[in-house]
Length: 311
Image (cartoon, rainbow, N blue to C red; front, side, top):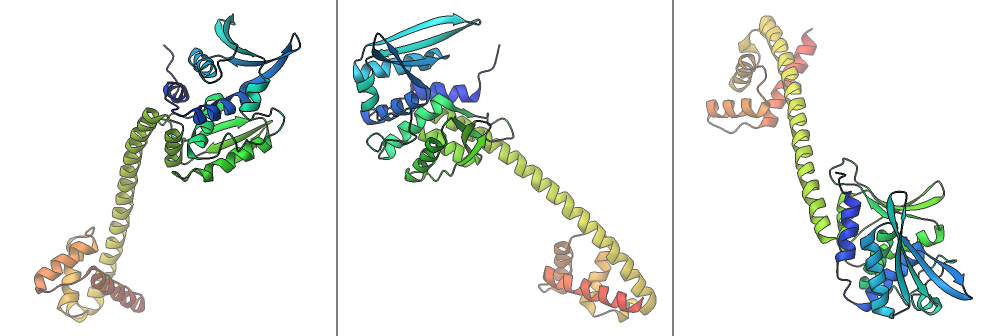
């Protein structure tokens, strides 16, 4: 059985959500029809035509049109290439198209339709439902995009994001072949967008998977860092041992420094891989006074300088 894509999960939740206000529903319809609709003429009358491959989306748009406009709309389907395709047709659609502020020729978004957070959210939900995609959070590549035919329209859409007051989503725009693609790569901004368009459950799933992955990745990074630090400590400890033995042979232990220095030398010779913090703790206990890591590091640096001078 084919696994449902994450994008399909998001879109199913959008069409199952409550758009609440009529203004938000109109903004949603305006975006969806602008991108996926077309006007044909039949018997000297304009007919709005919407085509779908998803039954849920087709029924949702059809129900929304009937609810708001009580228009002469018809839902039908045809079987094609072993799949079912759906059509929604609206007779005498000029008034409806005008009321939704839709222009199929210009790229502008009507300020009468989109003017506050509620209508921005509705409009972007319509855009995503019609042309959006988002990678599963289980993949290592976070990516959400909306692909459009008109560059000017894509730029108008970009301007909606900073006007939405509850998030700080910063999408980018690129041209890919003959399409203009608005995309988001940052995982936290993708999560914010899912919330914005009403896909709350999908957002929670996305965040849970993302947090789990980030936890594992961070754990791996810490392990790698610990390994690198240990390797560095062992390498430094081996060098320090060799230099100390050289200095003892040349000058004698008693001539290399005071009691603190001699204790540092003693513990380094005994423990090649001990970090500076451990040596500092041991010397502090022996002297019954606080000796810092930086103090230990200073002693080793001075011993190294003396070694270089004595070669």
